[in-house]
Length: 150
Ligand SMILES: *[C@@H]1O[C@H](CO)[C@@H](O)[C@H](O)[C@H]1NC(C)=O
Image (cartoon, rainbow, N blue to C red; front, side, top):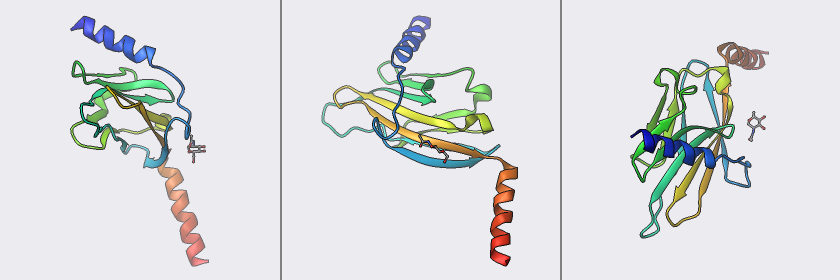
């Protein structure tokens, strides 16, 4: 068990590389409120016959925060990120996703998932997460109200 965890960590570390938005994969924009949660989607399905998912990794600004190794059915999450188990993965349905709760301003970042298949080329999908403070949000609504009633 310990050995497989080490293997997984090494696999994840070796695969660290910089995701280039647009060139390596599409980037979608997601906005959530401080204290709330955000669900980041990643299509990890393959429809080529004989193909299968090998490894799925989520990165925050290119640092791994979660991985699922389908070969040994093992999940890993970064202890420094997954404080209080605030990261929940949903891998059974497509798109697969990770949901991050208790959002703070520090969660605002460029996330991306990397999906390795047995046959198909690696897939990268980016999510640009913006975390809006409650105060900022109130300001925004106030501005809209002022615009509406002026
Ligand atoms: C992410 O969103 C922020 C805020 O809109 C923007 O300034 C930044 O350029 C975006 N980054 C990418 C990689 O799309």
